[in-house]
Image 1 (cartoon, rainbow, N blue to C red):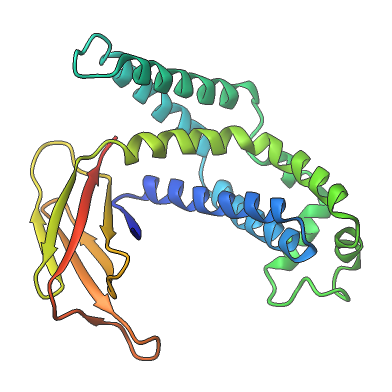
Image 2 (image 1 turned 45 degrees about the vertical axis):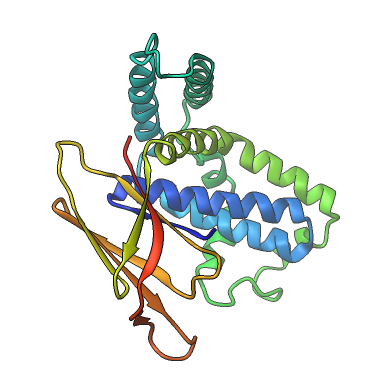
Length: 252
């Protein structure tokens, strides 16, 4: 069942972007081919571009501490599975401890690497990583995959606590909401919002055979979901038929 996630604030948007990029880094590193390792490095540079703009470590630690307190307050609740609760608290503790162990700015080891920095700067130029532009990079790509993987392990190791913390927070966020079956009449659905605690993310799941995809707009008063169909040539058009879907409002 295809699933679409729509963040409602910049903080969750940033976490989802870093999660997506880091997942692509790890997948391409594991694939091991030269082209895959090139893609892994490009995705790593994109991850660094986001990390450079914010102090993500502080945000992650604050959120982990907040979630740990919230989970601890659930102890003794008869409707909560105690073992699962303790497992989540342990996961939060592990992620926070790993983040606190390194006092350096996240990604500083990559910024301090002059060779990687030179590649990163060239990567901003369309076609800037051609062999004649930066031969040292192509010399590295011609090493065997075991050598390149070992280099990636060294570059990624200091960033893994960030990755783990983001996974933990998003896991809690995704599991926080109750799913409900909805129908978008003629491709449009609206739900008014209420309550003091606004949603931070909406997840929309549709049937595998559904020819449409959702787009979401939201403010503090309402959520609007529109379903569009496309022929991959013209601009997508709103569906004219009713669309059944599953909606989950998530909140930390």
